[in-house]
Image 1 (cartoon, helix red, strand yellow):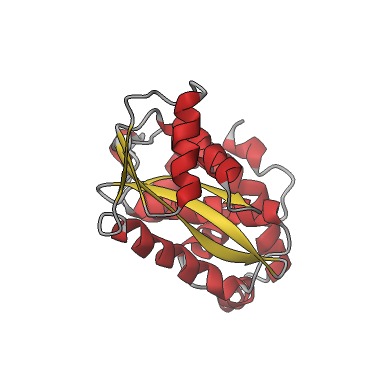
Image 2 (image 1 turned 90 degrees about the vertical axis):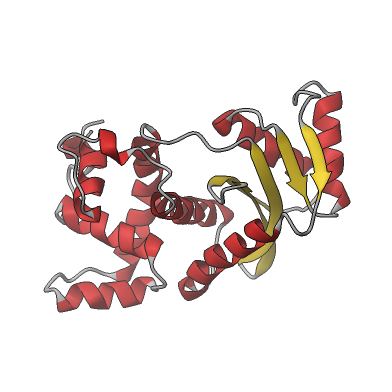
Length: 233
């Protein structure tokens, strides 16, 4: 899909849409904060419109950025944390490699063996097979890895270890995600939460230099120019 088709029929210029989505995902702002900021720039946009843009465009932005993704490391540090969706605790499974680069995430209504298995399968589908998986002491995640090996869905050569110390990095990375989510004042639906978190993770990957932006046409150097080049490619 060309960038002109992506934004076809929208009342606002595509640069405004990209800017609002990018800022919402990257900074500790509520949608109302962002709407007020745009108003000071002479652009009147409802905060609900910004939220709709996030849901509409994040999946497409992810696809376009993925063309330039760098390969993550094969030593994964995996853990889960909690966020609220519609007033209920929901479990956010996440992984980073030993360099702190984001591997993957999965949002689940349950914290059990099945949820952990689903996360590992998603991470391997998107990033290949790890060499080693580091977990904390939570038994269900360990059972999930053992189960996947037994079922033949994870190679037996994948090493499994438990280390609270080595998982400090993923726990610190959880805090970054939760600090960004806090001003959003909660989610109503797990699907919209997953899309928004996907966008937050995308913004984090960009900051962590997980994309080969040097291959973009014209070799852009500023963040707005890099985003424009990725969307147009």
